[in-house]
Image 1 (cartoon, helix red, strand yellow):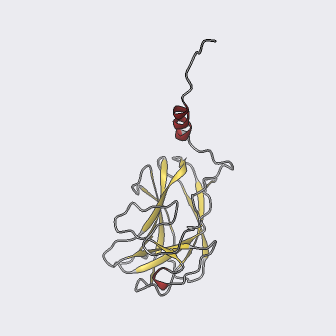
Image 2 (cartoon, one colour):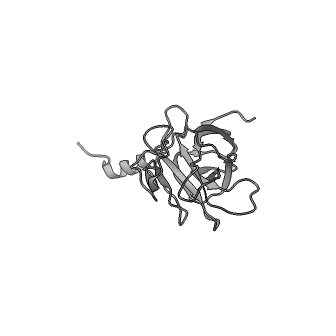
Image 3 (cartoon, one colour):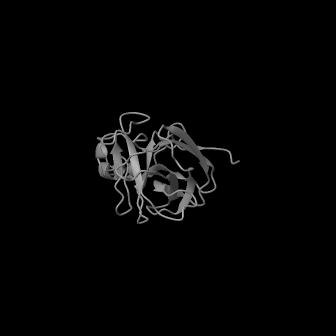
Length: 198
């Protein structure tokens, strides 16, 4: 029998690995949404990275001998701000693109550690989106997080262009006239869901 084509497994694998991952329930699920990993200082948990030089998140509890207990699972993440204006962030490439002009909702548990090796002041969380690794549009910002207990914060946002990356950044208090040492704790991210525009 005459062959009409050649099957090349590597080409098929490359084709299917390029195809976008379809989320089964229509939601965009983050990789490792509760920041689970081995507790340690100056490290990103599995599934997360930081593209900002000098950004060294801490996986809690236990880093710097601080026993910040997680809201979900075994670990959470801590980000700090510094008096020189630098601040820490954590990011990941999403499994599905955030579409321009589409309304999305997202929630995360936030808390503050009153004593954090000198980085003791409360800060807030800013959420950024980008088509690449750069922070291109600030999608949401929390109020100042000054409570030690975990609280759930819900955000709604509309990207102004297609975005593939999500970055969460510690930032100074709204209206602050100076930069300072502060911290924020993050845990238990929800999936990103589409919503009706308000």
